[in-house]
Image 1 (cartoon, one colour):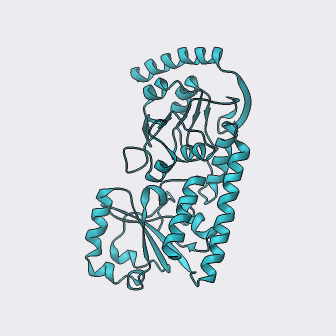
Image 2 (cartoon, one colour):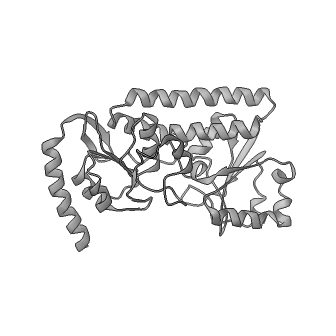
Image 3 (cartoon, helix red, strand yellow):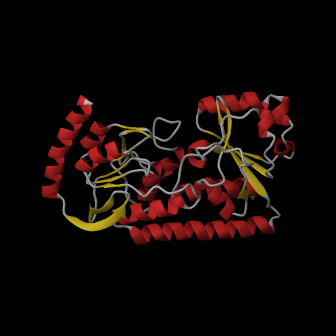
Length: 309
C-alpha cells in the first residue's frame, strides 16, 4: 500500500505538469463519466489488447502497451503493423499494470479495458486522461462499441468507423464465397491448454467474426459461469461438440505440446471433425485473446486460407 501511495504522489506531480502543457479539446463518454481528452494525442498508452488494435487500425502507434495472453510481448498478428523504430514499450501484463512504467512513458492519453479496477483508474487518471469503456454483458459485437470509443478518444472516429465497415463488408463477401463453394455449417472454437481443452463461448469476438462469415458458433452449453469459456474438459466431454468445423487454438509452446500429446490418443482420433479432416489449427493469441478491426481482418484471412484453399 505504501508503494501505491508513493506512485500516487508522483502521479499527482506529473498530472499538474501535463495540465500546463496539454490542450484539452474534446470530451468522451466513458465508464467514469465524461472526460476531457487531447485533440490530437501524441503519446498514447494502451492497457488492453483491443485498444492497441484500434489505435494501430487508425495509424496511431502507442508508446506503451501490455503483453498479450500467453506471451511476453504484443500478439503475433500485431507485429505486421509495427516496425522496429516505433514499437510500444511493454508496461505490464494483461492483469498487472506496471504504473511506474506507464508513468515513465509520459502519456497524454491512456486507453484501458472495461475491467480496469477503480483503484487502478484512480491512479492512472492522475497520470493522463484515462478512457475506460462501459462494461457490457458478454456479446460478440462488444468490440465495435469499444473500438468506436477508442477511435473517438484518439480523434480518429471516422477512420475507425471505416475500419469497422471494411470488416463487415469483407465478412459478408466471404460468407457468399463460402456458400458458393459449398462450405457451410456450424463451428466450434477450442483453446487447448496444458490442463486440457477449453470450449470458447459463442458470445465472444471471434465467434461473431465466424458467424458473420457464415459459420455459426455453438459452445454446446459447456461454458462455465464466467461465460467466456468452459472449464478444462476431458476428451470424452469434448466429443459433445457437434460443429462441422473445429478451430483449434493454442497460446504458446506449452499449449502446442499438450495438443500434440492429445492427438496421439484414440479419443481424439474418434472426434467426428478429426475423422472428417475439418480441424483448423489457429493462433490462440489472435483467435481467443484479441479483438478489434485488425484482429477481425486477420481472422478472416485465416478462415479464407483454410476453407477456400
